[in-house]
Length: 273
Ligand SMILES: Cc1cc2nc3c(=O)[nH]c(=O)nc-3n(C[C@H](O)[C@H](O)[C@H](O)COP(=O)(O)O)c2cc1C
Image 1 (tube, protein in one colour):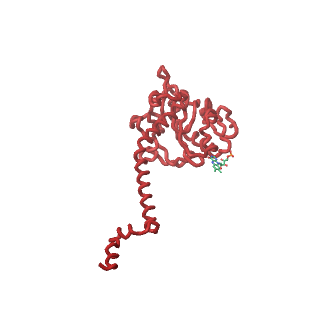
Image 2: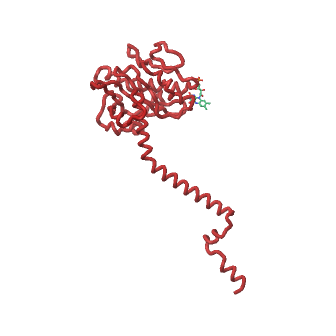
Image 3: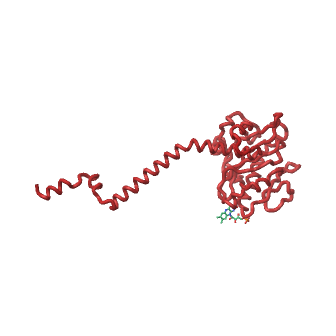
């Protein structure tokens, strides 16, 4: 057998054979390794994301429940959250009438999905909270005392700050006018600036403030200076975060006003809830 014939016999066959026979540092091989690595890595990340989704949903729900317990002042570290949360009575409220509805299951009603659904929401033309659409129905929570009377009502609120929509709750006393607490459970404001809405010191400023005056005029204000109505309606704006503070002022006024919970609060004050 000649030497030429020998070389022909050992030469790689087909495209794959020729590819495998290439030196490792050639461009096609480098690209092949890079693309394969990217594909495998993205498949692993996707699989992990899908596998973790149920756990994330459970954690999100638990976080929301913890926030409701905190804003109502009944959260203690180490407490069984689900057990403590069972004391709260969820209801789906029709905002326009201020009455509860049993059209939906309050335990599973999704306020955010409802706000995106044209059948259960309205596009806002007057939109100081910058939320675009408002759900006609929202989930509210009642906390009763041992005698079964309403002790606190916990109402969901949301609106735009500087960089993000802030989602939270306001807890009111049974008179529907005195604030027990306010806190946000989701936002993306800047740490140290707008994110100071989470600072316990700032949150504590809301305790015992009043929404409306004796004439029923909504007076609650987040501002740098005390409004003419008086200090009982004033929460100090965050230092260095005037824009987030303005967003909170707008969203609180919106949700506590006629487009928000005012009809419900009127019914509550009248003892009709
Ligand atoms: C990187 C960066 C992030 C900021 N984040 C916020 C914020 O989350 N909330 C806010 O109100 N202002 C934020 N500001 C500041 C605003 O631009 C603005 O200066 C401030 O709201 C004015 O508040 P003051 O009047 O209390 O100083 C940020 C500024 C910078 C440069």
